[in-house]
Image: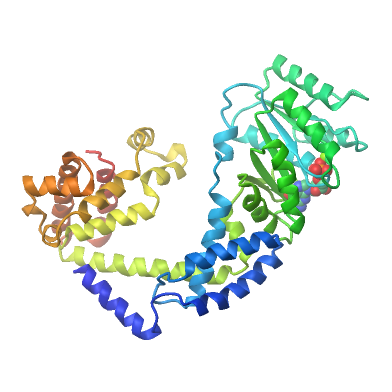
Length: 461
Ligand code: GDP
Ligand code: MG
């Protein structure tokens, strides 16, 4: 039933716009604008070229939502590509990697060019660690080359109630690092943050010193501090540090400035190094977890179009929802309706993530159990597959699904018989509720549905 309606709407739109997939001409025209946009955001040229080639390949022949302009669809594809490049990191996230250290002190070495924001960021990170986890952090400056660099760290740390290693004149960086480590061990610090010296440009002496420090001090993490406004030079800087040191993450500073964050993109594209943090101001609390989607929007500078396309996508979802509500009111509920619900849940990232977003204090007892129950969002995918394995007749009248049909469906979906049974049971309960729904007022009904949907999908009785 739904399929027919969908097809009808689609064909209507198709006659309106006269096209259902992206043509090469649409793509080429839009990519020209996007190329400019990326260059203006100071994304390094080789990165721009590589990106556009990939995006072009992906966009050719892609189906587009019928209610939007083809060019806008390309912008959205580009945006999503940038966002995923900036967010899907092979490594662990900053929280996973840095919080709850297995061994203490967890040593973090901050590296980067002079003026990139290392000293400031060292204190910011110490502050961040203390806020996210009751921890004791010691910071120490190994920058003996720049006058007053050590004092700068000490002063900024003190101002923010972070402990810093006492300064002894004329000590070599390696000696300072050893002394800091001994001090951190003796006084049970959880973290030791080493602020290293930088140079105006990459040079061998700087790298040799850092490499030597890495060998002797064995930091758990090396974080590159990169100036968000560094433009084209971000590319050689990124690989200049990554190749010899194998960075574990990056912190991009000055994301509060005029720059559009092209440096961030050049860095991930070149090294694959995960972007952990962004500095958004000079004060010690101006450090945030890196937000790839937001930066993708900034880089592209076409936020209006992206949100327009998103709205169109949401509207098409909402049309579906409104349709479904109408049917509920009439007491109609089939497997197709259930499948829509499941897909909606899947799209929302599943229950687990939703629960994780809530503050702990707000969660009811059983929800917290859920959170710990190692919930598997794959459950939605499995349920979706089960319904896909049903014949159209079975989807409309699941009561005809008896033993032999059940095995066939289980085989087809690659699941256990018990999974099919569970889904059918869940369906019957939901359907029963739908039958009563006509008598209820609509808000009550939707609320009950929401609660039940959540619990049932999670297999809670
Ligand atoms: P270092 O030479 O790498 O140690 O750099 P510093 O930490 O001394 O920072 C250089 C300048 O950049 C200082 O004036 C900082 O206040 C400023 N700075 C650092 N991070 C940020 C940031 O995220 N936003 C802004 N606006 N300024 C920053
Ligand atoms: Mg410094």
